[in-house]
Image (cartoon, rainbow, N blue to C red; front, side, top):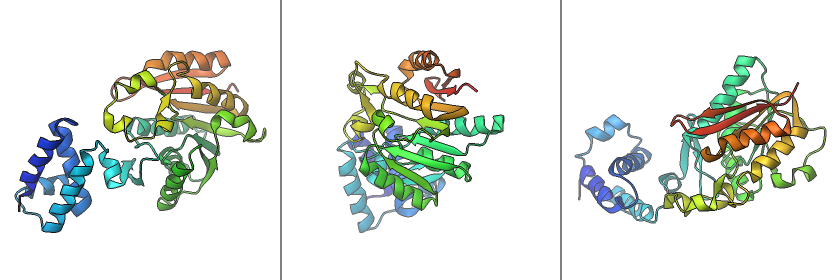
Length: 289
């Protein structure tokens, strides 16, 4: 039976066309962490260990799945977001650090202004990561999470239950928002990480994303790259409370265009923020008081 280090090298050799060596080592560590609960230091100390037959078979099976370009988070069935272990499958996007930054921006703004939100809506909730994180940050707030996908909402509901977060879920298409919401429904925070990758950009993506993450949550037509921003902004004009805030995660190529769209619609204080990689990623706008 091969040692842990020998199996790691097998992963590197067989997955080299999909990932670089450092990424493969991280994936391998994630598998062992899930299997044994190892810390990184323990993983490094135990590379000379020989796994039992059941673990060897388990790792071999995971490797075969990874060779199909399935992301490690889907292979494991979970992803981490702000310290929460969230269930994920191919019905929902894998939560990413940039979206953690979006949540941090909302929390920070509310704390600085001293205006704690009473009603929040997350549009296109997917795994529920944004809605759940905001509910935990603002436990007194009523939080709504909307998605057009019933499969995504099933995952989001499970995650909310696992985190003991009381979320009100809405199965609806935000493009038809005017038939879904009552005129009197107002929100202090409207937030969305909508589909924003154009079909042309799809050709440039790593195939583990393009082939496995849900296209419904990722892609828009080249002719209408701002489709969801346009409709969500229109929704916010009608349903954002006085001095409430609208937050978007955006395609880094369209930061200025999203800001211009919001300014033309009459929002105040439109601000564009970069992510940890220096790419345009978050837009915040306020309803006029």
